[in-house]
Image 1 (cartoon, helix red, strand yellow):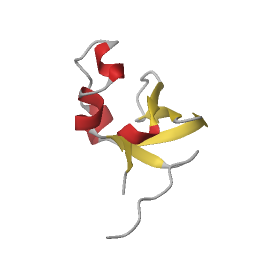
Image 2 (image 1 turned 90 degrees about the horizontal axis):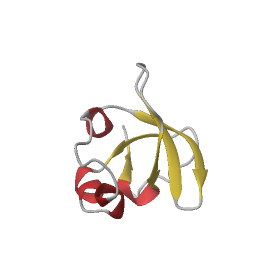
Image 3 (image 1 turned 180 degrees about the vertical axis):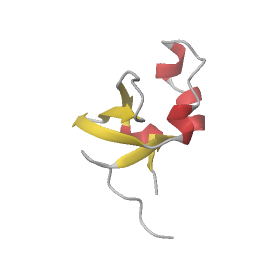
Image 4 (image 1 turned 120 degrees about the horizontal axis):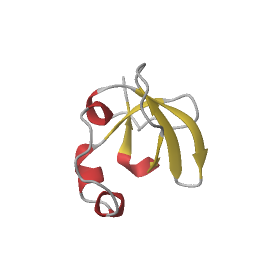
Length: 75
């Protein structure tokens, strides 16, 4: 198995559904997450510690901060 890609600014990612649904972030907000965060490509705009600021899609959607451990590279 190939090693996981290091996620950094400019990386394309998607959210790992299982990790988000069982997280502190899920209990702190509306649990009805939009499908696009799991299915479409997001781009990391910035990182701070263990978190990444992600922009999804070409339509206007809010950027979101999520832990890097809840993201995977979008190939």
